[in-house]
Image (cartoon, rainbow, N blue to C red; front, side):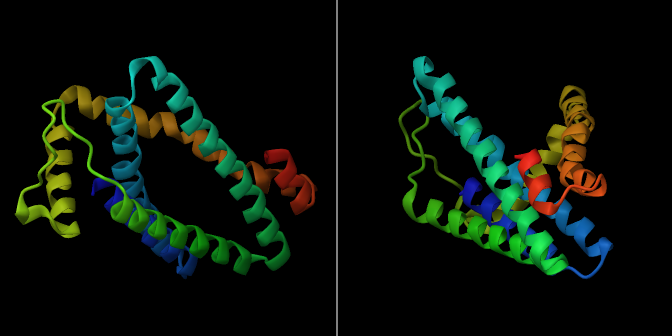
Length: 192
């Protein structure tokens, strides 16, 4: 359920970024997107770690990372091509399409996935008060506030913010290549 809610929040935020009309709207929606990503990605990693045999765990994480990079490379090339061909509207269309795919992924995950077994071999049970998406989000926000009060967790959060900055700036390589005079197609190829 956490992965599903994360994918849906992530997807809706991305779609809304594509439809936003101001930097202020896009900024808040990007923050909401971050909440969805923060819900889904660590949960997926935790599930893989818990459900995979130690002998094969590295391979599974490697395949996940590889697929993520393939998706990023393909997505970056398609987005750059769309933006070059259709200007601002191309970026908007890509954001809406990616958001729709994220929502569909969340719905498929909810429909097809089975909650994993805990070490005690009992299924995960969520308190009935929190079965709705909103209740689950409230419960997770409360947990995040509690974690942020622990000094070591607060330091990890701060490190994550600072450590992510160089990687986020690299997303502007495409624009930088275009500023240097490369065509949109060449810039997409260079980034890929």
